[in-house]
Image (cartoon, one colour):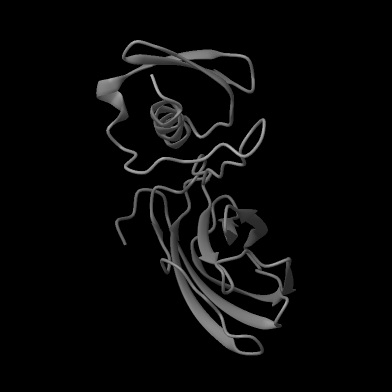
Length: 178
């Protein structure tokens, strides 16, 4: 099997498993891929139809991004993506069910690149905010306080560029549809 085919298999596995590949070995129509953590994974040709281009290995392991969705609220109505303008402001409405999960807003600057920092300039009265990097985005996660239902708000200043995002939150009781 050619190195291009092995690279193709590695591409698909990374997309499916979200992990870095440290070594690879081809045998017939299948490939053994050694994950960085030490677990070997056997992949056949039928499961590998997802990658259409060959990726080039540039080092012992490749940097792989995966969006962490564990713990998300069942109802989370948020803007798909916000790309704020430097020095400007943006408003983001957020509707979240209070079932113990978080609801996140994705933002990024040109490139796309994540922001270096997010400063919480106005805190929410009835929840917590976590600002962190997920891949090429900065994600602003809001988790309502247990038992709270009603309106909340907070403001985040993103650096560099001093862009401001004003978030208006509507928290519904668990099990609500809207």
